[in-house]
Image 1 (cartoon, rainbow, N blue to C red):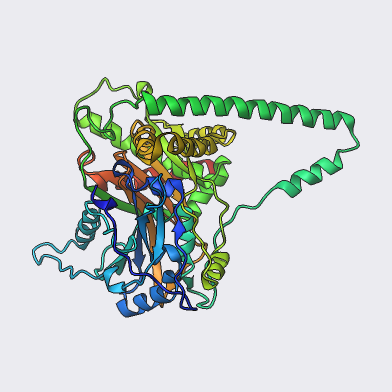
Image 2: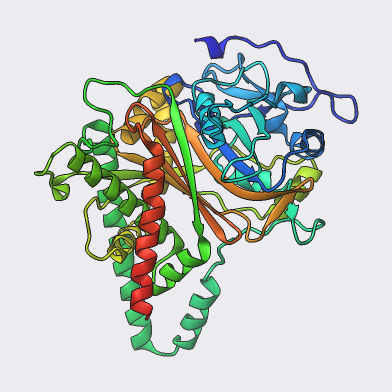
Length: 499
């Protein structure tokens, strides 16, 4: 296999003249190097002004390269019989990682949106040379309908998971309103103190204590039952249980193409929160509800065009593999301080997979998509499926090695319809070396599903990033427009209830 050949390394010296210590990669990160599990992360960044390339290089040199995973080669540890990989610190030549293509629109066709879309799509057909740290930055100084300029930050998924990478990337940014302050990320607070207070107020009541213990006992029984059911369904999905054929799945007998198309649409985060409050749900529930509504619009239009009048969505099995972060979220402040101290910030990948059913149907009330998503996610929150799937992947690696685990693990994902994930962005507008950010659209390529949906918040906006296999979905922009239209219909339904 070409990407596993030995690599000649240039060793990096620390401040005292000694060699910097190599970092051993986590088993999950190592598995991302297997051919059928080879994933790349793309962070599409839109800017409000044209990019000063030299200023951007200086910012990366001074901050990002301080982190070992961005200045290390990933090589196989020959002394380890399990063929694990480790990061060897090396000297980084920024010119090898920062690409500034000369994109000139065709005089007969000035569609710069299509020009940028094609460029990003072409990235999905190539990998990064293992002879250098596995990341690069593509700077496109081309004005589009979304931004004055666009950057594509591409890195191999073995460097880290989405949550840790976003925290690391944002540590290079500063608030637009205060260039000396780091961005703020929303970190969920614990409710333990609240529970403790209730317990204290009722400790003298034997009846109340008895009721609390019965509720806790039932909660534990329910948690155990739900976990057994969910893990059993996950294993069944990995072995034989496939989703129904639909416009989002690979037709039988065909293989997925090697090119992905990436589209992104931005909506109001304040409106998302308004819908959330009205339906007594969460932001994630609203995002999932909009996704279900958009997929339903796309599917029904496709079948109407093809003349399949007897199509019954109730009989269609359609599910999503949802990525769940298992690592406590570090604040941007903590990440920045650790980088300054040359500490290791990213500890590889730490996430589990949860499989959820999707409602693909035409509902009379658009808000029902959100309510269905809320019901589904509330049920999944009372289960340990995400942790069990994480430990299951670790067990597969120990039993069958990296190749065996990489052959088995993606089966559950390929048997579902889509991959779903979301990331929390900064609460306020931010800038990088004087460049104000317009939007963030994270996505991936290399996954075994034909469609992947990411949601990412930024200030008062939320961006849907949709990655699709162009051989399965030939009109990705139509699908992107379906997300915007579904959001509009759900918002209008919410406004009618309020009035």
